[in-house]
Length: 231
Image (cartoon, rainbow, N blue to C red; front, side):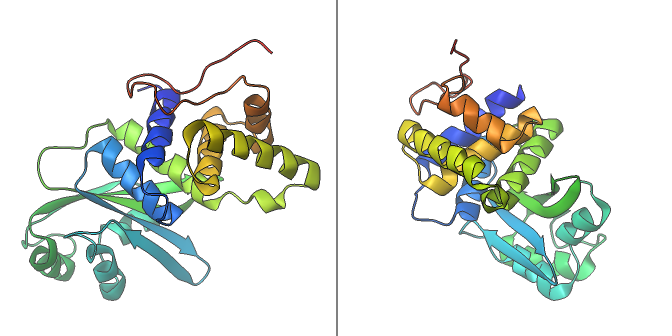
């Protein structure tokens, strides 16, 4: 799928998710919807610590279990900077203790642990839980989405100078109005587009302000969300 179309799905999914939830959880739920998984978790590496959030349900204890045991696909994906796919069925594999305990927690499930990259480094892992079949998108699409989510979570608008920050804030307000989503979600959409275009946050903000990039909550899900118009 074209990156712009994939980001359009992310934007519309965020618009449908309950705005009362924290942004990392909303991103988790959006990925579940787009990829047709049965659950997901985001694990973000911070200095001396890791932060994790999971969608509620049968699998929400799988990431905390890996953290406690010090083994599992999230650890491997983060350490080796590559996707790790493992079927958890209580049998022997590379993580014997985790596999046995995870089987009793979530039953038979395939875990797709995909590294999230931002600024040329691994910043965390998105775990996708699938109980039957496969993910709805290709491996390349899944990796792109993981990187876009990682970039959206870690971008820091406060590092910009005042004039740049003002433009980004104005553009965020326009995306809020167009998609009817909270400001944090709107900023995440702008960051994801900057990532997809290898562009700066300011340049994407300028496109929004000059209406070269617009969003619509009501467009069909198989269409891109952005449109290019003449200034």
